[in-house]
Image (tube, rainbow over all chains, first blue to last red; front, side, top):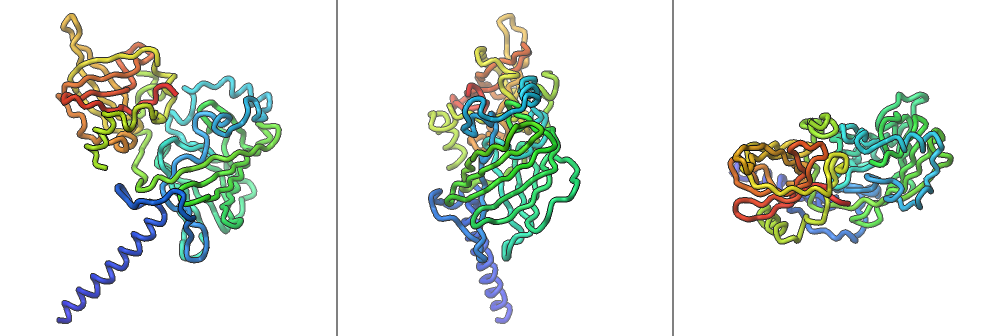
Length: 256
Length: 130
């Protein structure tokens, strides 16, 4: 009898945990393949403490092919310095570091490969927010929500990011970039002086705006700002994508 | 939606065709949009690996010699989302494949569509014109 009761209690407890988990996953938009039907124009979800829940599998939210076109700039409106213009004109798509499975940097995204914001912890104000990318490449980025930039950060692909909430908008300030990635396949360049400010606002359940300001006095004569919108992919999950596993053909393999 | 239904949907043009998948490299640097090849052959190998899946077919030439062609597909991830799986093509399958030929002149192409022995047309997930 006692054994039966114990099993029953465990079963109820397990069911409760599972139901909570499913609800959270449903709220974030992803319940795996064949997941919940959601309304993309539904309300913005929040954590219990009131923080916006940025969960879900997203695509888009940054340039891929051409920052000028996708950022809705007029031709020539992006204020390239002559040196940056010359560098860009020397670039061809075959040289894109992305084709060699190198990271995208900021604010580039990877077409139809989903990515996630992961807020940690969720029961109180997050100290860290991570961006997990499926591709390209299968990588991550971390945003320190309770930190400051180091005085002299080593130049890296994703730089050093600190974040804060301004109302429902996650503001990410990043410095310490290397100059190796391209903003897009067209080859918009930058230098190690790059400073980006992203303002991520979940407009409704299924749309997440990224208003990004690019400030790089080494490559552009003034800061410039545009907005890209990421779209939720309900029921979608991040899959493994190891770009360099078989990148032996085409440009990376010398066209063998 | 099951994989089978999605593949059928692709075959009927409800998904996929006309919806280019962004490759991790520049399509135009490797393939010629103006040079479409359509070949019938027997599958000799499948590489279900990132960043691009790939299959190889033996094509019998008019002079009875055999040429092995390599067809690049989208990534396994993109293909999975289009309804493919790693068993969609198997070694020994007699298929027809259409794609854009490599600029290098080698026996390579970026797959547009694959028609299986059963007559199902599958979108290859390549970038193509955009």
